[in-house]
Image 1 (cartoon, rainbow, N blue to C red):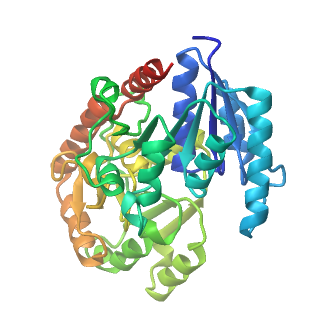
Image 2: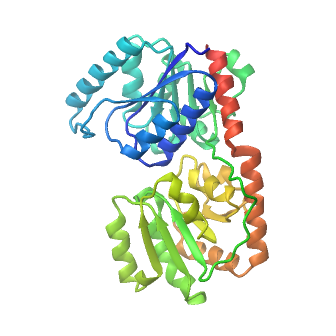
Image 3: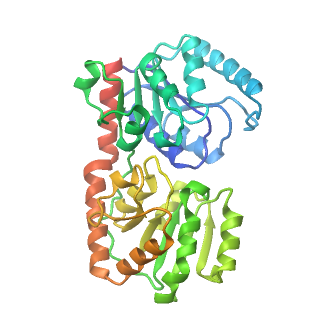
Amino acid sequence: MKNKKVLITIPCLLLGGTEYQTLNLVKALRECGYDVKVLCYFEYDDRMVAYMREAGADVVLMTPSGIRPVKFLPKLSALLRGFRKMLKTYRPDIVHVQYMAPGSLAILLFKLLGAKKVLATAHVPGHIYKNTSAPRFIARYMTELFLCVSKSSEHAFFDSEPHLYDAQLHHQGRKHFTVYNCTDIPQQRPRSVEHQPFTLGVVSRLSHEKGIDILITAMPKILSHFPELRLLIIGDGARKQDLQTLAIELHYDHAITWAGLQPKEALENYYAQMDIVVIPSRFEGFGLTAIEAMSYSIPVIASSVDGLAEVIEDQESGILVKPEEPSSLADAIVSLMQDSDRCRQIGENGYNRVKATFAYNIYQKTISDIYKNLT
């Protein structure tokens, strides 16, 4: 077991949800005794690289400049050279591809270059692909397993009944499964702190699909009930300037704190400042922020989309609202703010759900079973 080599490949190593979940994969494999190397094709953040190395992985930066070629042929050439060199020098027993663009191309190249066994994990909702024939072909002919982070994503990719990983079904020939993301359970018991002023929290990349503009549009209605409310936004992205402009146009930019992108060791302190976490995504493969917040017993209000609708049991371990409806989002937030007992109960229920379903130890056991069956 200790001599088995796993190459985890990923297009970028930034401070995002996919990268943090890949970090959990590194930890799980190292605890199983595997030798792990992480190959990053293009962009990277030194902090995420350091996290990977601290977890016991050797990290190889295929493009030291971190600049991704724009045109296809230079990109293809860079991938081909980098993959060939890695397979020749490291000789991995398993290549585990994080299926982000260029996911299909990466798998194809590894198979053509002679990789022994290839796994893939798709971190996106399958419905964003207009044509799913490529992942279906890849799952059937080029991978040992194709994993999705939610059942909704698996169903969208393969148009069949989704299933959490099951060793017996795997042995019977099934090649696609759902393996949920995970989070560590904080050492302290659930919190019951009410802050002054009441604080809504967002931990997200500031991009269109995350729907932060929907929350900002909802804020005037929320502030009409709670004028002292604050909105704390953790994250950065291409839409930040647009979001700040929208807040100014709506005349409440004074109520928002833009804390920027934060490393994982700082997130606990920021979560401690939040009374409700809001996730107004337009689509979401899983919703890692949801289980992080729930692990701290913070009630979550989220769009009823994709993986979020699996993570959260509506009105029990969180509240789900229709996507793209600022007024409905505002009503849900105001209603929960007005009921402190319900707020605390949903937070407690969320904590219990994460501990029972999305805790790291559950994920680690699943990864151990998958790799044991493969090796």
